[in-house]
Length: 443
Ligand code: GDP
Image (tube, protein in one colour):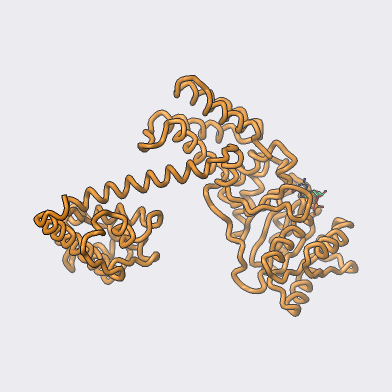
């Protein structure tokens, strides 16, 4: 796999005896060398190093996390971004049959990948059909037929026809009649690198006739940074496209190809890591990076940091609540972290106050996922005065806020009602706490 030397750099960093600043400098140099060795664009490497350095020297780690641990987290985040962020690709078909068109230059590993994809979906329980429409390479027909046997997919091909579009259309019809869930078309690939325009023209031609649900570009990782132009054009040509990078097992240029694709905004869905039919992996950049860094306990470290960060939020909320301070600002901060922390009712249960004899009706505090973004926009449209003192928001103000946030007065009202419920509950908690204190039941 690419960037082998990174692991050594991490070990050296964690075990080394130099000062924090020197260790950071040294690590960044090692990192730069490794990234450039794996063909990552120099400009990207520079940007990445500067970001890491700035954060490493300016940011304070949360309490309970050491500086060195925090630094690894910074490196992990920046590298994940370089390769496309923390996303797990969506591979489930959105309709049946789901038609996938595979394109790529000759030798990129397109036919092999068609077989791997078929096997991936067969294992998931789908009924898969493979269409042999690579009419240029003589061996492609037999190769795909063999791969369909191996994967348990159905096969369609027509050796007497040399028109890729016709075979594709017939293949789709054939498999529709066989009730296939997923149809994968291995198209012609006579083009070489440097001839991207004709590859994309042909993809457009076949796409217009076959109307695939997804177009996948297969790219050989050894092309490194050169992937940028092709991925960019591909990304711009087809809105339903994704990319599979092959042969990541056999090249030092993996970093180059993956970062070049990420820089175009296109997504890598799978990576090929060997010649065998099951050597295809879903590509999650963050997971990939944690493997590159070679830290067995990276997951544990990330969990630790996350829980510390959650606690910080809880502490802040607790502080606000203790003061009985609930404003739109408090609500906004909590809405922002809602996805990470769960609903308000759950947060309240995590607070010591929840042991008080207060009945919190969960229903009152439940917020639908879809409301969160809307509410954030609404709060963003409020004035400072309204944020600090939401009680002044009358109907006239509601109308202005609704227009400003692109929502309706009903939506704004919804949020205000929610806020008032929350405030009433806070008041009760405060009152009950006061009573308990008086009775000497709580200190
Ligand atoms: P096509 O012309 O694009 O259809 O290319 P093929 O599917 O015939 O693949 C070309 C060569 O690359 C074959 O020898 C494959 O075994 C090999 N290949 C494909 N994917 C991978 C991969 O992920 N790793 C390795 N090591 N070899 C691969």
